[in-house]
Length: 186
Image 1 (cartoon, rainbow, N blue to C red):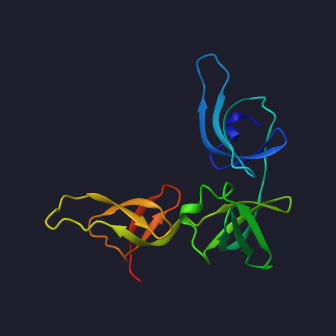
Image 2 (spheres, rainbow, N blue to C red):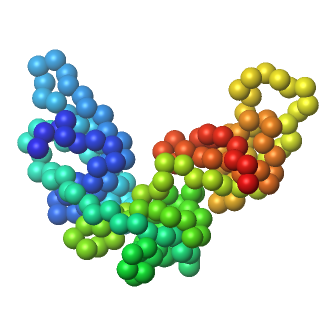
């Protein structure tokens, strides 16, 4: 495996543990070895570390099994998910869902990623629809295009939305970037 095989979002086995690559940058200097500069998140603990990999690094990219799941609820530090086919319930800690937590709503359909039969990661749909709980009213007459204002959504996520969005409106959010996509009519 070379450093060019690594990439953002891939799951690797490094030093006997599973890690998710959160940030990846391939660097090759003149007459130097290629280096993959990564930021890794431990799958079980959520601990984040910086790590550089060279061509001969002892790293294995692992394949995860994907299953349809439903987010049920959270109780304290534990988040409960149900396999949509077998109805088995699985739990992840708050650290394990830290990157997806601002988008999770009860009864939401997600994908569960499993490694050797163990539930290790939640994958969200590309977009989610959330209700605006609080935002300041737009200023009448402010017609400059692309003017945005902050809004707090039902999950606590704060995003920038256009001036015409009001509390109670539903908006579509891109889960990859955390940015507003469009208003949704419900």
